[in-house]
Image 1 (cartoon, rainbow over the protein chains, first blue to last red):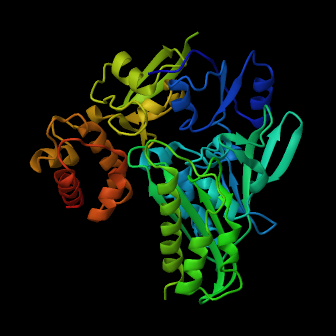
Image 2 (cartoon, rainbow over the protein chains, first blue to last red):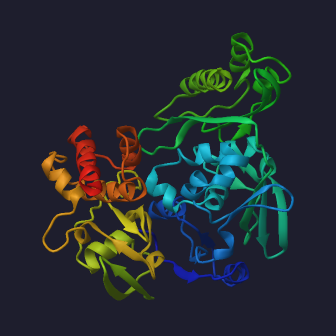
Image 3 (cartoon, each protein chain N blue to C red):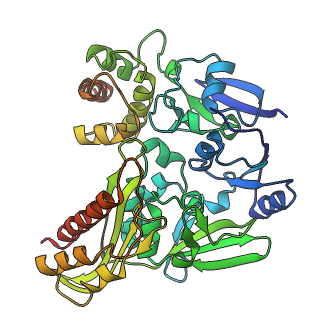
Length: 285
Length: 156
């Protein structure tokens, strides 16, 4: 398999990328790690007439703590770099926990956080993590720069707030130093996408939960925060009883995906069982 | 139509003009005649096409050849030195880490990536590292042993 023909251009800067986008005849797409786009092009699910390779834009490759105290991640940062970063391990370990289980070693060496978020695959792992982390996604395009909350950015299956020509440049995450977190995942055995993925971030003193965020991906057409499950634990002690309550409250009223691998009923069941186990693990000892 | 690229493959420099839609694995196999790198699933799952690109394992069926412009690539053909097998290759032979051999080049290149980062991996770390490489013959047991053999040999 190989993609349909396209015009290949390389951009050395964000401005150059945007102007190459604007000058294209027909549909142009930005190419980062290519690990969502190239497979889609091989299957002819995507058929851009121009591909703009943005990987040489070195200014989009960084992980640093900004003046605002938040962790800033350049959009071309790979999953492997996020998984191995000391800065992320200290301030936002949840993101690294998700990055570590994306695809496999080879995929993590090429795939980028910007590419994954721009694609917004329902089975991707970052969406739940950025929702729980209340990340801000900065995009740059022909009409300037916008800062978009993750919850507004991730719209639906393969759909985001990106306007034509816009590129994700930065993902900013407030510091959650001292919070507990985990990302659990029921893998599709071949593709390694999430059939169910749950990101949990909690501010707790022992078992006393002050704040908790629970977000799912894989389960529905788009990642989402499960506020009913969060409310079952927020301001309470995490005990077997309240954890069971949270698991029972989870995924109510959610339009759960169904496919040849996992029925909606199975997904929902796994979603609750995995949440219960993850919470037990998080608050054990 | 063609885009000029320069790549270093197994320490040898190549210049070529490629169609932008040509995948790296086809460039290696069909243009450079390096057929040790295999096309398995062709959907980024099986890892048979794994090569080392700028020091990191990647799936060459999911990269365009043009994306490798300026890169250094190592394929399974580049491991043998002066007629002597690389310890990982030797490990696969000694521990019977293959049956049909189709997945072996990819397994070896991913193991190379692992041992570069972690010269003394645990069994769990080896299995985790090889998650993106499928073998449909052996059940992985001897593949793990082959990587352990190589780790021991390379650190001695």
